[in-house]
Length: 238
View 1: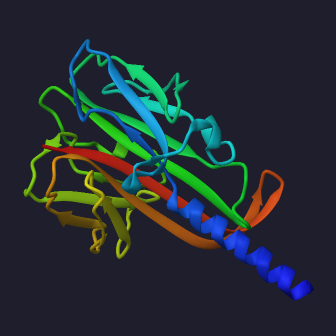
View 2 (view 1 turned 90 degrees about the horizontal axis):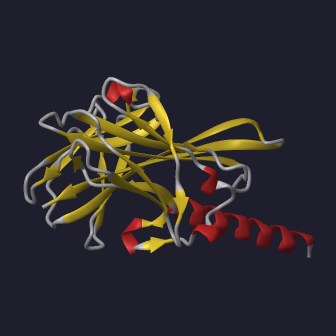
């Protein structure tokens, strides 16, 4: 009986962990903006490919206590105020000069998934003016994947994407690409941490990459034996 209870408990933990792995945090905003024009930003938690956007009340652990940061051209990093909606948080900022604006979230929930510590992170960029190249040296997320330029891409034209972990290219890792049509595919990065693919449909795409390591430590007075990180970003296609 004890063995049966142990098996059932392990199975429940495994199912819960798999469901949590499937979820991600992501930022949505327009890829381009204008000086003096207010830009809206939304943060969701759920599964993009199935259009599953969890209600804020059901977000895992304390994920809703994330911080949204904005790095502006020629300025430092500032924290934006966020407001809860039904299934997202929203924020606003107004570009003051040309350049690429970087929005970022990095959050480690207090709760563990079994004995695994989690880190959800997301990245979004907004290009104002003619400059669209993303300065990756200004990205502070430990893990991220992103297109090379903040712009609206064209369908059937190759898009270059890079993955980074702790400031170094993340080679031989799978990047998941999710389309607005429910299509998804995994691509493996080369030695430079890059992939290239041609989007087929117009709309918003999401990129997702994760890293799992067996490591131990203490997190909010609880011991963990593994660490899972997930990084997302989005881009638009016309």
